Length: 224
Image 1: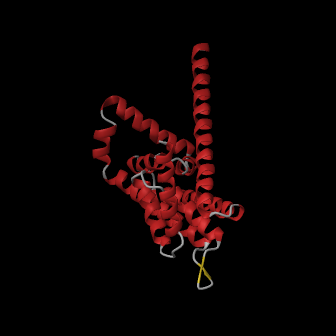
Image 2: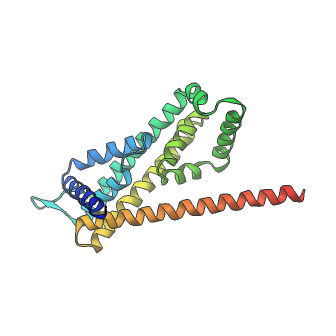
Image 3: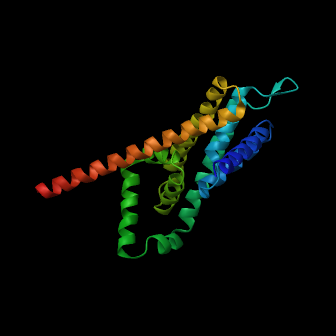
C-alpha cells in the first residue's frame, strides 16, 4: 500500500515538474485556479506552488528563465478572481434553483438569512478568509451571489484582494522553498505540505473560536 502511494506521488511529481518547466504552464495555472473556484476538485494551490518552485529553481531555456514568480502570482490571482466571479454569477442568476435545493422550507430560509447577516457583519474579511479554505471559497462566492451582495461596489474589490493574497502566499511559498531545497520535486511536496499544515491550523483555530463563541452564548442565555 505504501509503495502504491509512493508511486502515485512520484508520478504526480514528475508530471508537475515537467509541466512547470514550460512557459505555457502559466495558462494551465490560470485555468486550474479558475475552475477550482467553481468545482473544488482541482489542485489550484498545488499548481501555483509548483509554478513558484519552478520560478525559484530558476529553470532556464536558451539562458532565459522559464517562469517568473511575478507572472505566476498574476496568472494565479487572475484565474482565482475569474473563477470566484463565475461562482458569484452562478449564485446570483440561479438563486431560485439554489434556494429550492439548499434552502427549502422555514429552516432553509433562516439559514439563508443567517448567511446574509454573517456576510454583512464580517464583510470582506470573511471573503478573504474563505479563499484560503478549499471548498469554503466556493460556498462563499455562491452565497455572495445568492444573497445579492453588491458586485462592483463590494465583491470585486475584496475578491481581488483575496485572490492576490492567496496567489502570493502559494507562489512565494514555493519560490522560497525552492531556494532552500535542491530537488524541484521534493520542493513542490515540501511546500505543499507546509501549505496544508497551515490550512489545517487555520481550520482548527476557526473551529475552536466558533465553539468558544457558542459556549459563551449559552452561558449568557442561561444566566438571563
